Length: 198
Length: 153
Image (cartoon, rainbow over all chains, first blue to last red; front, side):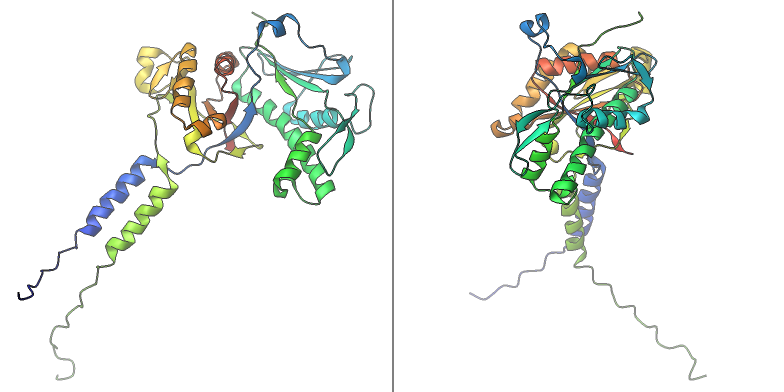
């Protein structure tokens, strides 16, 4: 048998074919990465909980009420409720959560066993930030309030991480981040919807 | 005369394009890997809020989307301009959310189910009433990890 010569396949159109595929993918895909504020909702309410709401001492509670005119009303402890702009909310929340000066009108501290580098510490884990909105509140205002509240926790954890581990929270390893999270536990509760002024 | 006279026409050497397909294929693969298919056609308009405390969503396959906003111009004549919820490809009611979440959860692998997240893409001018209803339904469906989609400020 003599060797027969196989003619070469003309591959000049492969480029065109792959161009068409490329354009197809360019059109049908989206490059943008999704970002957002991650929140954990409470478990579905059950009957017993509705009948008997957990009792919270006044000094431990910070009620943030956003009304239909997008004004932020703060009710804390025995103080007379007052309105603040959203820009001041973060500082107020930080002060409230950490209670650095051990003020009697801010959340009580009690000893709690924390993950390793901390050991037993005095923390304010009984505090509750309650966020209430009206059905006519603007979503943007609600989001900014939520953003500031989570920002307060994040800033406190970051400060703690810098003091304890000597580096920002983002650069800590998972155990260290967990420890910081346990030190300042997120305690934001969103009350069942209410309607005012209607 | 002899020096500047017409020479023989210089032939342009032909460009070798045999590596072009490989080049294009590598771009193609790059795009195939870094992108994901656009999943739905949007029927509502929304401008998501801006925040600072944002986290990146790593695995898009674990995320289910709920869109809330005004219907786009094509649907306005029929539906008006009040805020609507869109699940998958169609407009939906608050009562459909539980079913939607269950369907989405079924579609995930067993080990991924606890990590399911719901991304709420709502317009900044939406009223909270509709959002609290949505959140209540999500709680009842035990979809507790939610994300308020937003852009970095």
